[in-house]
Length: 110
Length: 125
Image (cartoon, rainbow over all chains, first blue to last red; front, side, top):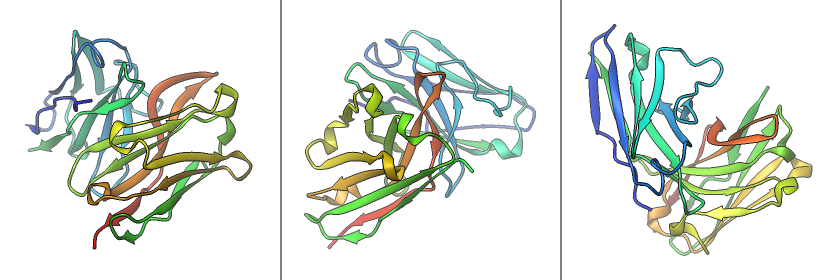
């Protein structure tokens, strides 16, 4: 199972919006509404930010939103804040009864 | 407090074995579907495997790179998840996290919800 494709890095200024893409195949992202997004700060465990493509767990800011079109999912962060600077990973359930992650995107808040 | 605490990470030679533990507290462990996810130094996340609850059949699924070498098990009486690692390779070097599958009212969401702090496994001669 190949990893999902994410940009290596994105950046934005405080208050701006950014979008991180996550491209898979019809066997994972395109085939299931089980796309999730995780935030990971250096030296910390990942944190669930989005599940089922668009849903936010309790306690996650509504500045984070998810979407999907075909084999590509996206995470949008609006009103960028300094604390959003982190690595972001997408993941999807797959037809092989397995889970696959993206390679990760480093978000820099300028 | 709801938490997961991993232990057992160590330096081991190629071909060696190691058993990791993940102690759960603050929630009904027996109902939880549990995953192991690993992260090699400076690299991304990689799913290792999942074990369902016994009431859901206790089914275990593994990622292809670890199948036949890594074994997931659970002891619900001790609220503990295990990862038995045999025939270790240098590419198994990583921080190993245990994590729960998000659940609500009996519905599992294929999302990694609660995470431990991770335990480091280094495979090197």
